[in-house]
Every structure is written in C-alpha cells, then in structure tokens.
Length: 137
Image (cartoon, rainbow, N blue to C red; front, side, top):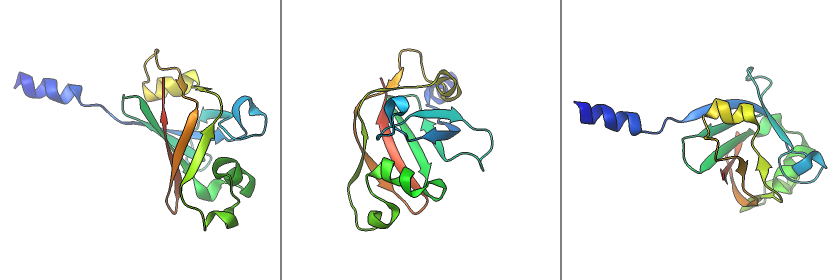
C-alpha cells in the first residue's frame, strides 16, 4: 500500500491559471511576443489560460474569439481573414519572457525556472484557441 501512495504522489498535477495576456511584444514595444500576462479571476475577462504540469514545458491557450484583428496578426503574423489559408504557423519570441511571480506561484513553477526561452514555437490551431507550447528555463 505504501508503494501505491508513493507512486500517486509522484504523478505531476496539472495546474491551470486564467490570464489576461498582452501580445504587444517583448518590452511592450508593439512588435511580436508577449508583453505581459496577469492572472485573471473572471473567465469573461481572461483571453487566455496557462497549463503547467511540472516539467520544462508550459502551454498557453489563447481564446481566438477574444482577439482583435491586430492581436491575431501579432500572434500569427496574419490577419483573421488571411489566417484561413495558412498552415504551420509559428509564434516568435525574440527575447526571453520573464514569468511574472504571481503566475509562477499560481502554477507552482519552481524558482530555478524563470522565463520562457527565446525561440520559434509552433502554433496549434483549433476553432476556439491558438495553443502554443513554450520551453521554460
């Protein structure tokens, strides 16, 4: 019985946090990238949510219906009308994005993991969401 309890406690628990994320570019200069992300308690005000299960990956789900045409273009590189014909969309992070302390705490991210790595990340698209899986370091 003790082994069963131990195995269960080692299973990662996925944490989910609602957020209001700005896609106004690293350092909020208006280019591509994440400007900021704040925890949101009301789902009606949130435009995204993060999922984390204890590893080196964090997922960002962005609600497409809550994005303006400009925000869609900053995320995908295409306007909403141009997007229909596109495949293999990528989200570019030109510089690492430091995770806000409140977000790290809510997702139970360890102190040694501080940021989303600079890179090019595939955007998975559904009817409802853009889903991006980031590497964190």
